[in-house]
Image (cartoon, rainbow, N blue to C red; front, side, top):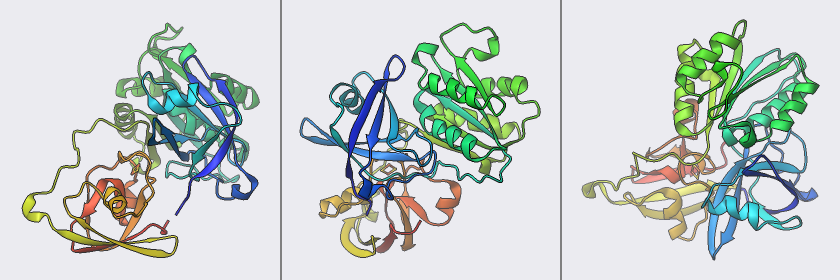
Length: 355
Ligand code: FES
């Protein structure tokens, strides 16, 4: 199983008005494990007031770059973000699992693609990694970014984006959209919703043949932008998205009807080893049921978003309550999010080693 390792904080600097940028040194012996694809994230674990807390943050460095950088927006009352901004110092260590996540791009120098990114707020972090990597590794590709924020002072990584624009003036197009600040063009004022996407495409999309679109932000923004892109003719298999935060749930995992409640036998294959436990079919989910039996399975958000708990159902049947982290093809091939799933059949076999 992917293990947590302590990473050393090499730098911690303000990044816009209400965010910090943290650079994490990876010890030489773990470098291989922490190689990542642009767009992937790191699950973190900290202990605050005696309670373990896990959160996932996207890497914003270019592929292959060390130290690994993340951007943390400080949410008032946000336990992890306030801890990161106020308690952590250079030289401290923080536990992080190796990178994971399906929201990524694989670069090929032979590509001559037009990539389009829609980011809202801290949704820029994985997309920044993609922009840096694509422009460096694919000399014939372009990146067109639409980046929504309240105002310039809260726009994360704005200096990095301008520096990239200086480096790649012909191949990077930056479009900042502010919801609470006047701009010269009315089109650039507002929120990134469906109408705004159509408007932006009308003004800036001429001649654009988007190969892939990457969308990162809160749940409603992802839904609106994705629908608008599909309306505009984009093939939905080329629209990739990643939510930040755990969406408010209408569909909270409900207890199964009592008559269906019974035991299931769960076997997991992880790091080549088999582990076994029993659970009630009306237990909340496989990850918690395993923990109750003393078996530690990977997880981070427990909200169906980060896909740290992704595994493959080799035998048996499960039901999954919420899925914001898997692509349709993954679900079709039998991948599930264990934090959102519980067994339906008498026995299930889950493979965590299948990629
Ligand atoms: S732990 Fe994040 S999706 Fe399951």
